[in-house]
Length: 329
Image (tube, rainbow, N blue to C red):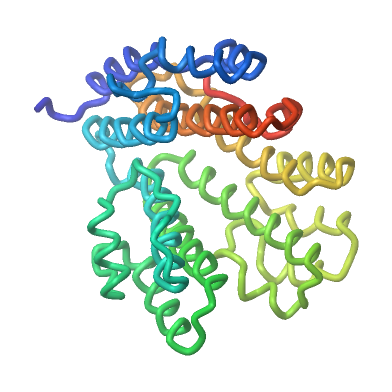
């Protein structure tokens, strides 16, 4: 097993990137038929599953996600940094496992590619003991389980898991020498808090309820959002002025106001976050190619899943154009 180094990691990543679906390939997949898309996956040996058929696309996607995470864990010279990205998958899986426990369901939307195995996370959830998680997530889970003992409300699960995950990422980023990692997770929190603000208001929720569902503050302060809650969307400009991503946030808000669709802000968020790494992807001997490869595979998996879902369900291809994010490269 070679010792992790930037030289070795970047050389391996450079070779692996050749198997990524580029923008042209994804465009052809989106413009073709379902059979065309399945043929492209088969020809590319997507997921590296020799026995896979057209019915196994989810297994193919999750196989790629798992392989990608294993590659990142093997190659990363800075696991504390790359683990922040992998842990987001564990946060998703924690949410679905806890909701499954509350609702008594067995069928869950499990994602491969985290730091923990299904067995580890399942044991945490069934035993309500989360000692393997980072401290911030442990604290959030303790608070969540205490709440659930009083009222088993599934909607609380995402609030507390997301809070713990984002708090850990923000705190860890502050200790790192890589400036972009602080910018990345501060922007992630800011975008997600503004999106939560807009969704709560669209639902007609009370102003007092907003504070209970917001993530930790980064550049966009909780108090500023609460003060703007009953005012027009234009007043958000002042609330977001302290964000590292204020220009992108404002651009996303402008697009949302024109379209009336909050998903435009989610798309702006995802494209902005990728741009923080994409513009540095050729800087060898740095963490950027490693993080970039992970984000590229994650974005690719989401694009493949979106295209196949649209085509299998006979939806209009405009759905793909509306929801497809920018790709790496």
